[in-house]
Image (tube, rainbow, N blue to C red; front, side):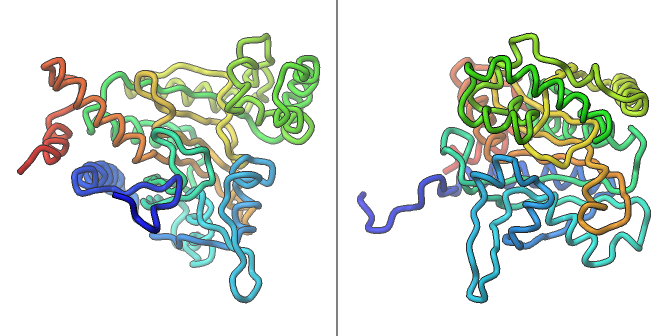
Length: 343
């Protein structure tokens, strides 16, 4: 039926059948966060745009191309939140939560907004749930948030999980890598997209996250950041690896994961299933809280994409039904998906 005012491109109506799956995933994530003593913070849907420029990064695609910004009636530049971490950090500092305990754990869930190219599992308004662990400098925090990420998807009954990890080092050891990477990229610049040409000059590590050329760059003899880590960062990464092995988290080391946010330091990671895009991702960000006006505070966290997870569960359920199987997703997930066929 034709309607006079259709929905905005990049948004989607979540009808009752799918809403049940969204809520099921959200409840599962919340349950695991709360089991590990994470407390919920509900952050505003919009913030001052400066918050994301200072945190997410001025040269990131999110800030340069994807952020929804607008002026309010008093001329202040505001932005719909493109991610959750900056708002959590602001709330943590503005409400003096940093004075209450040296170790604090928070989680959030809600809609985020990015002016991205709409495609399957990628919307301009999308749902995320995530957690933040403040105050723990040791690799135990890295291992815990990676374990929680895996546990959520395992609890959903999703099999074929694949976790990739890397270390981005600290600002000191990263400088030598950026210089080496930029010099290498200049030698192949004629084969790269225009955006990568700009990134080489502004922030060469962003080329490793390019939607067009990342694969091409990684398939050449591109320098690896793991070869440039200082002793402290190398030791931190080695200990993280050993902790993950000790708690039976399967993973691979991918020296080209950088993620799309400038605040990450040391450990970064992402989770996929089959041939999916990243269903969840995160890392450590030891400098962000100080950068936002707080005391030096180590931190780590991750976010999971609820929309992509819904799509994966629906595909798995459809494939299982066609093949007469039930082993790809767990019983609880099968029950949630069964609501789609309930009278």
